[in-house]
View 1 (cartoon, rainbow, N blue to C red):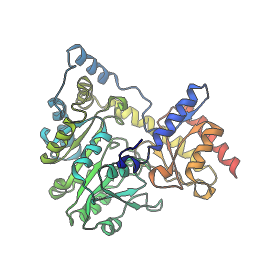
View 2: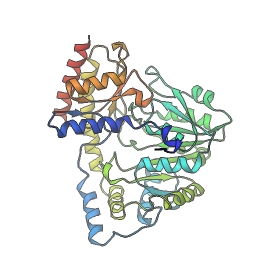
View 3: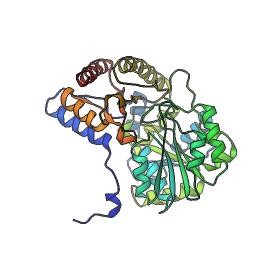
View 4: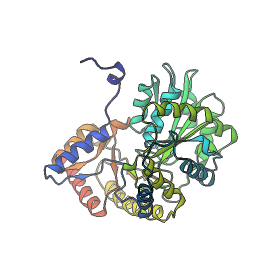
Length: 388
């Protein structure tokens, strides 16, 4: 069977593959502890579920506007103005089927064959693959644990060529959990200001911060940077709404119109009644966010205590999201082999760092109960000890 060449260039998602394997083992009755998927283990807050239920009862089940329900676009614009100092208007917003969909639509709209997109590594697994699907060339810039897994202004400057179309900035980061401090964001912004390129700011984890870390959107640095910035975000992580599939782009009006045109010929509108749950997420109490972040902070401490005590591991403390990204290079084993053996021998699912462009690391999500974390980290410790 002949498939389109573009599919042959795309690497399947290792995070989803490992989660699928772990779930299959669970169905067989195997006691698997999964730290592989970036999904909060909390229920969606009650007031959000209630808003969606009310929308169902009110008959909000028909086709909606492709770019999103007007009230949700208003709520998103208000949030970006209030929380992020980004002066977007409702017409600058397009609601998408999750944050991933917003990025896919954007890249299909802006990237052409030959265009280069700068992506710092470690990176979220789908960035390079989406660029390739759009016909572009991912330009991977490796970062180091000593540099906090962050691209430096010098590295960004060196990576920019006449073919550079876009720079993707993800803070807080998946997979590392690292957060660019405001001064670091401003330093990167100074480089971007010198060039005719777009910045895509993926801010899906912006509310999950620790130890006084502060999130600054690069578009808020100056009016000039605002004109060069496109924000991608959504409701999945902050409000435990992964299955709701609601994300958004905030961008200049021509881009929003183009993305809406593309979406109109693919998925059309996002699930109508689910959007009313998203409205409640932004317009309602934020106590649920505080409670989840406090729980994540407690779990983060426990995971770091375990990981930093494991021989051969080196793990900088993350300032955001809900991942740790320990370096296993001293063990002399590749990340995929390590994770395969860990799952088979100790029934613990982790994601190999090669999926994120860092083969000497693994990613562990602590979006799991404390009981699961204690048991899983003990199994991980025992596994590593068996290798020494």
